Image (tube, rainbow, N blue to C red):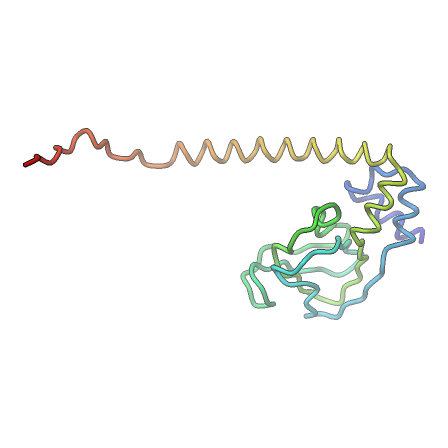
Length: 166
């Protein structure tokens, strides 16, 4: 329990929870041991919560099935599926154990129940997520501006003669 508590506390999403709320969460998570090559979930499946990697590694791959293009490796201390803790959503990628991996599954229902019992923690989480969302939106705006600057200008239709009528 102490190890689970410490692992959850180190993750930014859970670090805003007070001790009692984090303790409730630590008591309710499900520990999973998955062998190398095990598909944890596939892209497009309904997501029912998040996963915290305790040991081992998870490969995230684009598309359904374990043979999709590699996206990234998720290592111990990381949370997979943060959005799924709060919203009904689908998995955007396929997750495959790169090696024997130990995880904690955090069901959405448990996370929401913990937040409902700890309104101050819920408020802190809302502020933290709002701040991260604002940063992300700002970065996306920068990317959009860069793409617009690098896009070739369309040819002006004013240079083409208009067809004659009749």
